[in-house]
Image 1: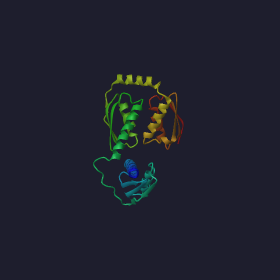
Image 2: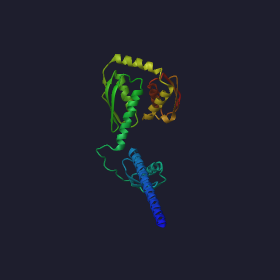
Image 3: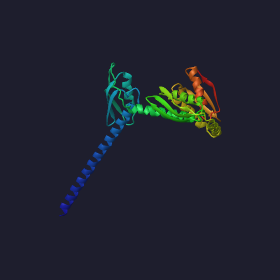
Image 4: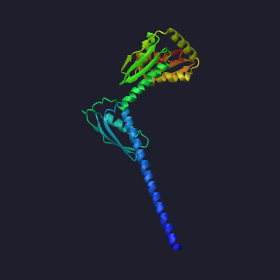
Length: 276
Protein backbone atom coordinates (compact mmCIF):
# COMPACT_ATOMS: atom_id res chain seq x y z
CA UNK A 1 0.00 0.00 0.00
CA UNK A 2 2.79 2.35 0.92
CA UNK A 3 4.71 1.42 -2.26
CA UNK A 4 1.65 2.13 -4.41
CA UNK A 5 1.19 5.54 -2.75
CA UNK A 6 4.82 6.42 -3.38
CA UNK A 7 4.54 5.33 -7.01
CA UNK A 8 1.36 7.38 -7.39
CA UNK A 9 3.01 10.46 -5.91
CA UNK A 10 6.07 10.00 -8.13
CA UNK A 11 3.94 9.58 -11.23
CA UNK A 12 1.84 12.61 -10.34
CA UNK A 13 4.95 14.70 -9.70
CA UNK A 14 6.48 13.77 -13.05
CA UNK A 15 3.22 14.56 -14.82
CA UNK A 16 2.99 17.97 -13.14
CA UNK A 17 6.61 18.76 -13.95
CA UNK A 18 6.08 17.83 -17.60
CA UNK A 19 2.93 19.93 -17.74
CA UNK A 20 4.73 22.92 -16.23
CA UNK A 21 7.62 22.54 -18.65
CA UNK A 22 5.21 22.27 -21.55
CA UNK A 23 3.38 25.35 -20.32
CA UNK A 24 6.61 27.31 -20.15
CA UNK A 25 7.50 26.26 -23.70
CA UNK A 26 4.09 27.41 -24.95
CA UNK A 27 4.36 30.69 -23.02
CA UNK A 28 7.87 31.32 -24.39
CA UNK A 29 6.67 30.53 -27.91
CA UNK A 30 3.73 32.91 -27.59
CA UNK A 31 5.99 35.62 -26.16
CA UNK A 32 8.40 35.22 -29.10
CA UNK A 33 5.52 35.38 -31.59
CA UNK A 34 4.35 38.64 -30.02
CA UNK A 35 7.87 40.07 -30.16
CA UNK A 36 8.26 39.06 -33.81
CA UNK A 37 4.92 40.65 -34.70
CA UNK A 38 5.78 43.86 -32.85
CA UNK A 39 9.12 44.15 -34.64
CA UNK A 40 7.53 43.46 -38.04
CA UNK A 41 4.96 46.18 -37.40
CA UNK A 42 7.61 48.67 -36.30
CA UNK A 43 9.72 48.07 -39.40
CA UNK A 44 6.71 48.22 -41.74
CA UNK A 45 5.42 51.42 -40.12
CA UNK A 46 8.80 53.10 -40.60
CA UNK A 47 8.79 52.08 -44.25
CA UNK A 48 5.27 53.48 -44.64
CA UNK A 49 6.40 56.80 -43.15
CA UNK A 50 9.52 57.06 -45.31
CA UNK A 51 8.96 59.04 -48.54
CA UNK A 52 11.77 56.98 -50.11
CA UNK A 53 10.28 53.57 -49.37
CA UNK A 54 6.51 53.89 -49.03
CA UNK A 55 5.87 53.57 -52.78
CA UNK A 56 7.94 50.41 -53.09
CA UNK A 57 6.74 46.83 -52.80
CA UNK A 58 8.61 45.68 -49.68
CA UNK A 59 7.55 42.84 -47.40
CA UNK A 60 8.93 42.12 -43.91
CA UNK A 61 9.00 38.99 -41.79
CA UNK A 62 10.78 38.55 -38.45
CA UNK A 63 11.73 35.37 -36.65
CA UNK A 64 13.72 35.36 -33.40
CA UNK A 65 15.55 38.62 -34.07
CA UNK A 66 16.20 38.03 -37.77
CA UNK A 67 14.35 40.18 -40.30
CA UNK A 68 13.86 38.98 -43.85
CA UNK A 69 13.16 41.66 -46.45
CA UNK A 70 11.72 40.90 -49.90
CA UNK A 71 10.32 42.96 -52.74
CA UNK A 72 11.57 45.39 -55.38
CA UNK A 73 13.10 48.87 -55.37
CA UNK A 74 14.48 51.10 -58.09
CA UNK A 75 17.86 51.96 -56.55
CA UNK A 76 20.47 50.32 -54.36
CA UNK A 77 20.35 53.22 -51.90
CA UNK A 78 16.73 52.35 -51.13
CA UNK A 79 17.63 48.71 -50.55
CA UNK A 80 20.36 49.74 -48.11
CA UNK A 81 18.00 52.20 -46.38
CA UNK A 82 15.47 49.39 -45.84
CA UNK A 83 18.18 47.26 -44.22
CA UNK A 84 19.44 50.04 -41.95
CA UNK A 85 15.90 50.83 -40.77
CA UNK A 86 15.33 47.18 -39.88
CA UNK A 87 18.64 46.99 -38.00
CA UNK A 88 17.62 50.09 -36.05
CA UNK A 89 14.67 48.31 -34.48
CA UNK A 90 15.36 47.13 -30.94
CA UNK A 91 15.96 43.37 -30.85
CA UNK A 92 16.78 42.91 -34.55
CA UNK A 93 20.22 41.30 -34.70
CA UNK A 94 20.42 40.27 -38.35
CA UNK A 95 18.81 41.19 -41.68
CA UNK A 96 18.47 38.91 -44.67
CA UNK A 97 18.06 41.55 -47.38
CA UNK A 98 16.53 39.78 -50.38
CA UNK A 99 15.18 42.99 -51.94
CA UNK A 100 15.73 43.02 -55.72
CA UNK A 101 16.98 46.16 -57.49
CA UNK A 102 15.27 46.86 -60.81
CA UNK A 103 16.30 50.07 -62.55
CA UNK A 104 13.08 50.13 -64.57
CA UNK A 105 10.88 49.16 -61.63
CA UNK A 106 7.50 50.87 -61.69
CA UNK A 107 5.86 51.23 -58.25
CA UNK A 108 2.26 50.06 -57.87
CA UNK A 109 -0.36 52.47 -59.16
CA UNK A 110 -1.18 55.21 -56.67
CA UNK A 111 -4.44 54.49 -54.89
CA UNK A 112 -7.18 57.09 -54.71
CA UNK A 113 -7.15 56.50 -50.96
CA UNK A 114 -4.32 58.22 -49.12
CA UNK A 115 -1.71 55.93 -47.66
CA UNK A 116 -0.88 55.78 -43.97
CA UNK A 117 2.38 57.66 -44.56
CA UNK A 118 0.68 60.41 -46.59
CA UNK A 119 -1.93 60.90 -43.87
CA UNK A 120 0.81 61.25 -41.27
CA UNK A 121 2.67 63.74 -43.50
CA UNK A 122 -0.43 65.92 -43.84
CA UNK A 123 -1.21 65.73 -40.12
CA UNK A 124 2.38 66.72 -39.32
CA UNK A 125 2.20 69.72 -41.67
CA UNK A 126 -1.09 70.84 -40.14
CA UNK A 127 0.36 70.64 -36.63
CA UNK A 128 3.50 72.54 -37.68
CA UNK A 129 1.53 75.36 -39.33
CA UNK A 130 -0.81 75.66 -36.34
CA UNK A 131 2.17 75.79 -33.97
CA UNK A 132 3.94 78.49 -35.98
CA UNK A 133 0.79 80.62 -36.04
CA UNK A 134 0.31 80.10 -32.30
CA UNK A 135 3.91 81.14 -31.53
CA UNK A 136 3.81 84.18 -33.80
CA UNK A 137 3.52 87.53 -32.08
CA UNK A 138 2.46 89.06 -35.41
CA UNK A 139 -0.45 86.68 -35.99
CA UNK A 140 -2.74 88.25 -33.41
CA UNK A 141 -6.34 88.60 -34.50
CA UNK A 142 -6.25 85.31 -36.40
CA UNK A 143 -9.02 82.78 -36.08
CA UNK A 144 -7.65 80.03 -38.25
CA UNK A 145 -8.60 76.54 -39.31
CA UNK A 146 -5.73 74.68 -40.98
CA UNK A 147 -6.30 71.72 -43.28
CA UNK A 148 -3.73 69.83 -45.34
CA UNK A 149 -4.33 67.50 -48.28
CA UNK A 150 -1.38 66.00 -50.18
CA UNK A 151 0.90 68.82 -49.03
CA UNK A 152 -1.52 71.61 -49.96
CA UNK A 153 -2.51 73.76 -46.97
CA UNK A 154 -5.86 75.52 -46.80
CA UNK A 155 -6.29 78.37 -44.31
CA UNK A 156 -9.83 79.32 -43.29
CA UNK A 157 -11.08 81.84 -40.76
CA UNK A 158 -10.55 85.54 -40.16
CA UNK A 159 -7.66 88.00 -39.92
CA UNK A 160 -7.73 91.54 -38.59
CA UNK A 161 -5.55 92.99 -41.38
CA UNK A 162 -4.32 92.15 -44.86
CA UNK A 163 -0.78 92.03 -43.45
CA UNK A 164 -1.79 89.39 -40.91
CA UNK A 165 -3.44 87.33 -43.64
CA UNK A 166 -0.30 87.53 -45.78
CA UNK A 167 1.89 86.60 -42.81
CA UNK A 168 -0.20 83.49 -42.16
CA UNK A 169 0.31 82.36 -45.76
CA UNK A 170 4.05 83.08 -45.58
CA UNK A 171 4.46 81.07 -42.40
CA UNK A 172 2.52 78.17 -43.90
CA UNK A 173 4.36 78.28 -47.23
CA UNK A 174 7.74 78.15 -45.47
CA UNK A 175 6.82 74.92 -43.67
CA UNK A 176 8.57 71.68 -44.53
CA UNK A 177 6.50 69.51 -46.88
CA UNK A 178 4.09 72.24 -48.00
CA UNK A 179 3.62 72.41 -51.78
CA UNK A 180 0.96 75.13 -51.96
CA UNK A 181 -1.20 77.34 -49.75
CA UNK A 182 -4.82 78.25 -50.43
CA UNK A 183 -5.34 81.32 -48.27
CA UNK A 184 -9.09 81.67 -47.69
CA UNK A 185 -8.74 83.90 -44.62
CA UNK A 186 -11.23 86.77 -44.58
CA UNK A 187 -10.04 90.19 -43.41
CA UNK A 188 -12.59 91.54 -40.94
CA UNK A 189 -10.77 94.77 -40.06
CA UNK A 190 -11.48 94.40 -36.34
CA UNK A 191 -9.03 97.04 -35.11
CA UNK A 192 -10.26 96.95 -31.53
CA UNK A 193 -9.56 93.23 -31.36
CA UNK A 194 -6.15 93.87 -32.86
CA UNK A 195 -5.37 96.49 -30.26
CA UNK A 196 -6.44 94.31 -27.34
CA UNK A 197 -4.51 91.32 -28.69
CA UNK A 198 -1.41 93.44 -29.19
CA UNK A 199 -1.63 94.72 -25.63
CA UNK A 200 -2.12 91.17 -24.36
CA UNK A 201 0.96 90.11 -26.30
CA UNK A 202 3.02 92.94 -24.80
CA UNK A 203 1.87 91.94 -21.32
CA UNK A 204 2.63 88.28 -21.94
CA UNK A 205 6.08 88.94 -23.41
CA UNK A 206 7.40 89.88 -19.97
CA UNK A 207 6.36 86.49 -18.62
CA UNK A 208 7.77 84.34 -21.42
CA UNK A 209 10.92 82.54 -20.38
CA UNK A 210 14.12 82.66 -22.39
CA UNK A 211 14.16 78.88 -22.62
CA UNK A 212 10.65 78.88 -24.13
CA UNK A 213 11.71 81.43 -26.75
CA UNK A 214 14.85 79.46 -27.63
CA UNK A 215 12.84 76.26 -28.02
CA UNK A 216 10.25 77.91 -30.28
CA UNK A 217 12.84 79.57 -32.49
CA UNK A 218 14.65 76.23 -32.93
CA UNK A 219 11.35 74.47 -33.61
CA UNK A 220 10.44 77.06 -36.22
CA UNK A 221 13.71 76.34 -38.01
CA UNK A 222 13.08 72.62 -37.72
CA UNK A 223 9.68 72.97 -39.40
CA UNK A 224 11.01 75.33 -42.09
CA UNK A 225 11.70 74.16 -45.63
CA UNK A 226 14.10 77.04 -46.29
CA UNK A 227 16.20 77.30 -43.12
CA UNK A 228 18.58 74.57 -41.96
CA UNK A 229 18.43 75.02 -38.21
CA UNK A 230 21.01 72.31 -37.60
CA UNK A 231 23.83 74.79 -38.24
CA UNK A 232 22.31 77.69 -36.31
CA UNK A 233 22.87 78.19 -32.59
CA UNK A 234 20.12 80.04 -30.72
CA UNK A 235 20.66 81.75 -27.36
CA UNK A 236 18.11 83.96 -25.59
CA UNK A 237 18.80 86.38 -22.77
CA UNK A 238 15.95 88.55 -21.42
CA UNK A 239 14.07 88.28 -24.67
CA UNK A 240 17.06 89.14 -26.85
CA UNK A 241 17.84 86.31 -29.28
CA UNK A 242 21.39 85.82 -30.51
CA UNK A 243 21.93 83.73 -33.64
CA UNK A 244 25.30 82.28 -34.60
CA UNK A 245 26.60 79.72 -37.06
CA UNK A 246 26.56 79.35 -40.82
CA UNK A 247 23.90 79.57 -43.50
CA UNK A 248 24.07 78.76 -47.20
CA UNK A 249 22.78 82.04 -48.61
CA UNK A 250 21.71 85.56 -47.83
CA UNK A 251 18.09 84.55 -48.35
CA UNK A 252 18.39 81.81 -45.72
CA UNK A 253 20.02 84.27 -43.33
CA UNK A 254 17.22 86.79 -43.82
CA UNK A 255 14.56 84.13 -43.22
CA UNK A 256 16.32 82.89 -40.07
CA UNK A 257 16.28 86.42 -38.67
CA UNK A 258 12.68 87.03 -39.72
CA UNK A 259 11.44 83.78 -38.18
CA UNK A 260 13.20 84.52 -34.90
CA UNK A 261 11.77 88.05 -34.72
CA UNK A 262 8.30 86.62 -35.31
CA UNK A 263 8.28 84.44 -32.15
CA UNK A 264 6.30 85.72 -29.16
CA UNK A 265 8.38 87.33 -26.44
CA UNK A 266 11.34 88.17 -28.70
CA UNK A 267 12.41 91.81 -28.16
CA UNK A 268 15.22 91.87 -30.70
CA UNK A 269 17.52 89.60 -32.70
CA UNK A 270 21.31 89.87 -32.85
CA UNK A 271 22.63 88.17 -35.98
CA UNK A 272 26.17 89.47 -36.40
CA UNK A 273 27.60 85.98 -35.74
CA UNK A 274 25.33 84.36 -38.35
CA UNK A 275 27.58 84.16 -41.41
CA UNK A 276 27.66 82.67 -44.90
